[in-house]
Length: 415
Image (cartoon, rainbow, N blue to C red; front, side, top):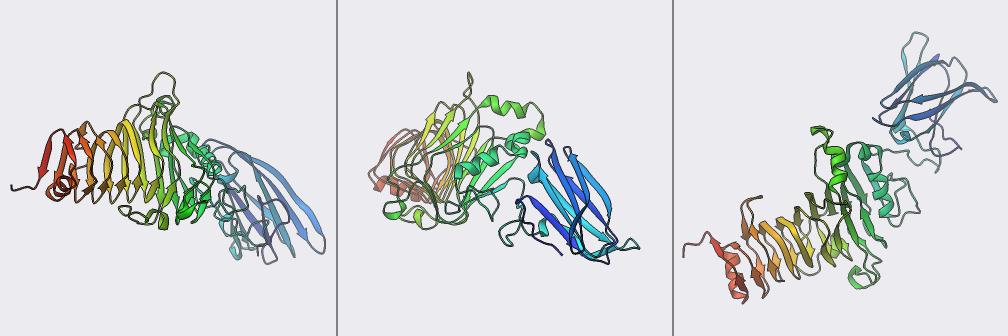
């Protein structure tokens, strides 16, 4: 049976009576870079608690430790205390064996089946090596598990982007931060360069203090996404196994719509301030990065701050305000809306969306076909640059009284 330790939360305890004659303990360090250390304590339980095993081991990267211990006792207990940089990736299992060497099913225990050392039975749960949890209403500061989430979104980002896998593999480590529904994080957040970060709500959530009507914030809070070709090159020079682009995804798992006014705050993510792409490299600001909004609203602006090169952007069920970036490519804009100026490099595919502000583009791209604007509507705007659209969208463009400065291509028209 498993017992609960009164020690620190990283203690793991196994205990059991006869018919176990011996126990086999296996400890695995799954970290490819860092080491961990484990203190093994075994106790005889016979009315008193007497120490009979005391061993300290160090496991190097990808290290494995296996050892048999005597357990022909009326009662015994093993306590494991883990530490080191690879602590979170170190797992322990213990197997009871009979005098014939057969496994004793009642005494088979592994880390994921244990109860936590504190909290009166809270599971000691490890979700995955690159998944972290955040909940603004949690007591905090948190460890990133679903039972002890970070109460700061920046703390979750820091833990994810500085995790062993992220440091080792850079953009190839997909870092997922799951956000509790109805969280409001009254903080600015910064995502460092050369990382793949997904901020995904399990329900609606806000970046801001959300103290106004409809979850608006009196103090706007901003997202800064840092870029650096030099930081990427640290990984890219190591070969194809490290080759990927930096990615930032912001949104929720809910499938909403943003072409109407109020849908974002019912089931989406609200960013009360700006989303800024900030170059932090010295000398070379050019890099290609990926950005997605999934059922999100950016109340502020999408801003270029030193970053050059391509910013491949995908907007699904989202609502934006001003978007100005001379390298931004709208690869997909689906069931979304823009409320103010768009001044970007180009667009590939826009469908079922509403464009309410002036647009300036250089290119109608073929990156994500079919190229063009489909089943979409317009406010009274000025479109500067090539305009490729289907007949239905052209109807709304003309009827809105919008102005075109450039060349129009009407798709599927028999006129």
